[in-house]
Length: 215
Image (cartoon, rainbow, N blue to C red; front, side):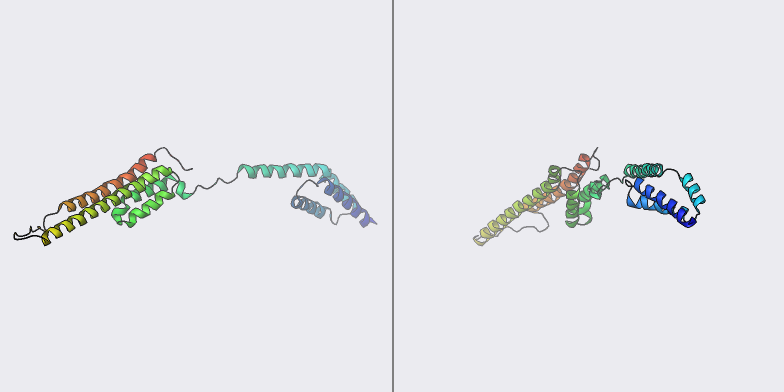
C-alpha cells in the first residue's frame, strides 16, 4: 500500500510536469522528465512528498526550462558563422594574378601569359571591361601586327624573287645576312611592343585595384 501511494504521488507529479512542458522540444522535455523521475524513484510516500515539495510547481519548472532553451537559441544565432570569402575575391589573389599577367610570359614564355590571363579573368575585383582591356587589347595588337608584317614580308620576298628571275645582264643585288632587313626591324618593334604592353597591362590592373576590397 505504501509503495502504491509513493507511485501515485510520483505519477501524478510527472503527469502534471508533462502537461506543463508541452511547448518544449521533445529532447529537452525528455531530459528534464527523466532526471526528476530518477530523483523520485525508490522513495517512500513521505520522502516522495518532501522531494516534490522541494522541486516545486511543474509549471515553474517548465517556464524556467523554456527560458533557458530560448536563451541558448539566441546565443547560437548571435554567433552565426561568417560566410567565407572565395579566394578569387581577395586582394592577395588579384595582386598575384596581375603580376603573373605582367611577368609570367617572361618567366615562362607564352604559357606564363596565358596563365596570368586566366587568373585575371577569374578575379571578381575587376570589371569585365577592365579585364578585356588588359588581356585582349595587347594580344590583339601584337597578333594583328604580326599578321601584317608577315604579309608585307611575303610580298617583299615575292617581289624580289620575281625581279631576280626576270633580270638581264647586270648582277642581282646581294643581301648582307649580317644586316637586318626592313621587316626584321619591324619584327623587333612588334616584339618590343609586346614586351612593353603586356607588363603595362598588369600594372594598370594593379592601379585599378586601389581601394577595392573583397566582395
